[in-house]
Length: 355
Image 1 (cartoon, rainbow, N blue to C red):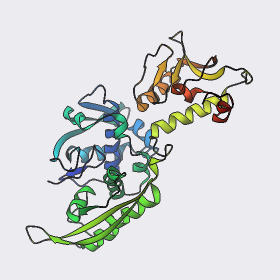
Image 2: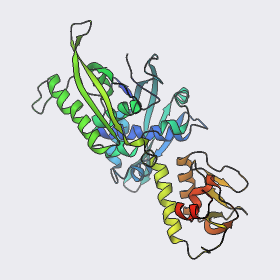
Image 3: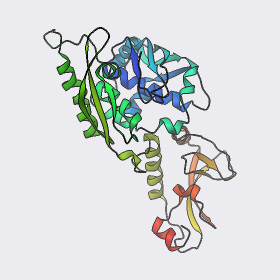
Image 4: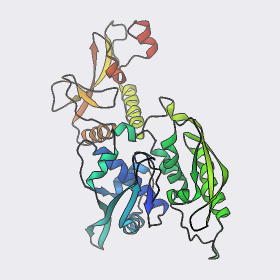
């Protein structure tokens, strides 16, 4: 079975037709697997509430989410690390769990078991984060979500590349026995216009990727079935702009730091020293910084979190449990590694001759 997967940016679901909610739920699972890159596990336990808060969707829809978990059930995905390598298959098993109420059992979340070997598909968490997960949840159809994940793997490709219709049908998880509202079989031209070209338009309108897909020619498979060949051109990728290429977690940390700096009171703006906002943990005697890799690191160079998602989770945990406060310290020099914590603007730093 052919797959065009690259580092989990593209998936092909085998022998199962999914809904839009299924795709979004599976995307959240990928994110959680990625967070465990350094300490791999072969299972996850996820609350529907956490999923809804992260995606800003599906609040109070635990019944529908449970149905999605049941629909996913035992599912196989086909993927590989490079398009010129053989495809590999990985199995996942989804199960809902419940909480007891006076009215009976209420769905609370789900567990998923998977093959621990899947971690070998990752290089570093950052490399997998090269596409912005926010777009998966804002794109309106499962077809546009899956096509975005396929195309984003080629975002830096300067030359055109080609893909066949039979591969696109699998990548977009299109039901080959698609029916119209009257129950009649739909033609491939309908699938092409509504699902394939329609998804291209949505991606171009709503994401950081601009792409062109054109019919290039026709071919036939071994059974004599016609196959359409498409030429794909990556016209523009906004993500190579530093700010736009940030992940959702990085943007949220930046926003939190920005709000924190706004709440800081008076400090000495005339001093030759550099004013830095720092995190004061109640369980440590020395300050903690957010460094240029979005890690939490203290003044003794001890790394408390290794990835942006873990940093965000740890900050939320500390804030919720009232374990941290904030302060301003005046430092003798400017360390670019901790530049996010600096209270001076780039213009002010240039005036002082430190950058």
